[in-house]
Image (cartoon, rainbow, N blue to C red; front, side):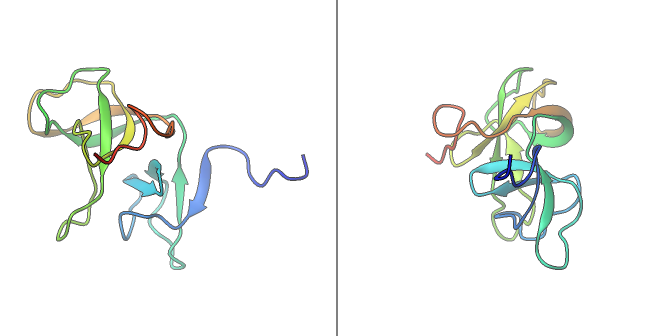
Length: 128
C-alpha cells in the first residue's frame, strides 16, 4: 500500500507528558497512552509502544481497592512531581488499561494490560 507510513503500534513521537520520558515508564501523546521503549532522545522524541501489552508498573489504589479487571487511568504529573501516576482514579485521567493483579491499598507494582486508547466514552479520554 503506497500510503502506509508505518506498521505496528510503535511510534517515535514527542510525548505530551512526562517532560523527559524514561525507558519503561508510562507516557501520554495527546489522547494516546503508552510505554516508553527507551529514554527520551536528544531531539526530544521518544520511541513509544502504544500497543496492547502487559507490563509490571507502579499503580496507586487512590480510589479504594483495585480488583483484577478494574480500569487503570493515567494522570499527568503535577509539579513538582515529574512522574505520571497510574491509578484507579478516573477523574482527570486518561484510560490506560486493565489491572491484571489486585491491589488493596497504597502503591505497588502490579501487572497492567495496556489497551490502546479507544477514544471517548466511559473508558476513553476522561477529564471530568
